[in-house]
Image (cartoon, rainbow, N blue to C red; front, side, top):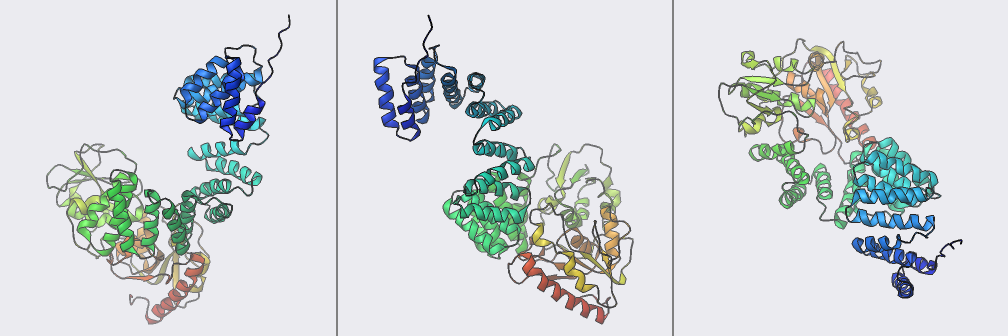
Length: 572
């Protein structure tokens, strides 16, 4: 006897459910079950409705009954296993969900929903590589792969594979050119990849297409801030904050742009509110650290150095000793460890002699920077002991002012020795910082803008950075090490630099510094001067670099010509 295939008696009910008319769909399913208690499709339909309502336990029971009927065709049986798997996953049963969804995929390998749902279960099991494989399988069989590619892009983004994520999101944008969410996803990846110009354009398109979520405006504001368009960044971040006032990360970003615009009271108020609301979170630590920058820039050292310690909660933990040095005197050595950038290291080397008055020191600095310690003028090298892999206590170089209780402005006198003497007509130039730094576009100057300097009579120019150096500048013989760069700086009668390592070296070795500082600028160049003979050239308005730097460089050229005419050894 040939067994007849069960017809699907519920297409109308499933159609109503897909349209959102769930009450009418439920009435049809229950009416069917009133006459046929184990009708599998009606049980499946009620299971789908239960899942929609968050009743995953009920859905599991209904699907278990439906699947007891062995006469259900494989296509419909596969859909039941998908619903069962998703309900199990909703209850936190990842491995049973994976098993059910694997059956669904085996029964209907051409159904992309089975592959996508299986990927969810694999993610829950921590098998992200297998999940990616399942999503790629879904992409191969899907007629409309936009949703699948979005998932693949999100997973690649989470794993730091920015090129893969961008490729998936570009495909979605091409397929859905008026989908704001697609543009927003691509813009977020481009921002993370530091492709700032394209990120701005894509995020503006996202907003134009209706993606007006706080996160989209937050990303747009960060991009605009990185590009130096501070007024636009403020507008975007205020919009994001208005729509998500309880999002501490967005509030912190708004505080940052207000601080850059010089509205330090408003910024400090925001940072204080964040720190009170969430003192143990990363957002709270960042808010305290940002507030410390405002205080240190004003010369409020007692409060500033204490708050500055919040940065320790923001950096990745490394090898640590059994204790953090508390600043006390004694005979047992302490280890001084480097932290953050080379400019920070040079700036804080001035505190080593004070620390050496209290304890013998061991130094643990990155390779290529140890030479700097021997150049500290007032440091008694007899207090230095070689690093032997252990220490009773250690301290970050940047924490020395706090643990030693310093509450006054730092001494401005030079504190690093060099083996070179200044050449009266030699001017050192540094026009860009590390391009991987997110806000480097704001601080760096296009080298072509500096060409107006080359025709100033009586001067020679020395390029004080790695990479390509224009023919009209001399190339230093050795700047591969920080010590070699310091000696090159020492040759200069004047150093002109953006806010990067060279600026700090100039001050540390006692060479006059003309700082090309961005609008707003870092706390180190605010009201308190850390070095002698520093003159700042900075934009008058918070405009993007392409608009603001040309006037600054023209002002610089006039001043440099005057300096040369007066006699290049005459200082500032």
